Picture 1 (cartoon, protein in one colour):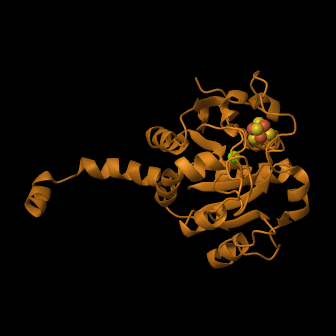
Picture 2: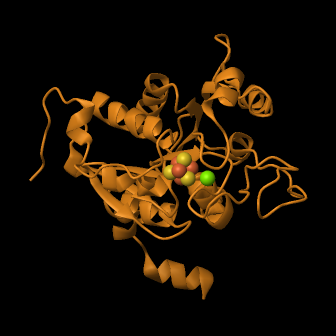
Picture 3: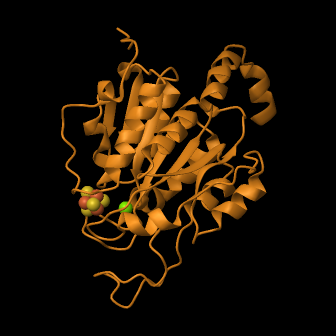
Length: 281
Ligand code: SF4
Ligand code: MG
């Protein structure tokens, strides 16, 4: 039976499982923002699913009172997409880290983005592999020294927002875990958006890399006069890596694949098999 919540608070979406993150982990702020965003929308917990892969941030579904699916490494998006295609009535949010989404799961990100499936993705980016104790990830900066790269990282740094924009993702935003109110608003807008929403959440890993200080000093609000329908300008903002812009960069309304799939079901009822065989046999 569908459960509705009257005047919910973020607490109504919090499970009794205590987060097991290190004290000071940025993921606490992202969890708070997500609880706020979902409560702001008054979503029924039994109509909402949070899906994750593997990593510190992927423990997320355990800490929420919605339905959850803690899947396997890099596979949050195949699960989330399948869920949305089968149950378009549900609100589906996929969460995880930079390693999960931009390394082993990068191929899935590309195709989910191109399909414009109506799901929301929140990537907690700490620019490191936290769960496996501090190796470089795709978003670690070139030259970064860790125990696995003693002479410095040889690869270039992956740019999540520029990648999302180049894939024509229909909602692209960045938030910061130390600003949960602003991040909550972006998550709420992302869920409301009909289409694939990509929210890049800067989320420090003080145990193995960033402290909050560096990002506190660097993050900059998206300029007030930025037009979120201008993809080229959004790309220019995404390229400012020294000054990470936070806020909504890009939004475009266009048909989603889960809507198209429903229309296809109707179309298939009038499908002319004979004509098909004549044309393609
Ligand atoms: Fe958070 Fe880093 Fe600890 Fe993982 S290792 S819980 S990312 S602070
Ligand atoms: Mg990480």
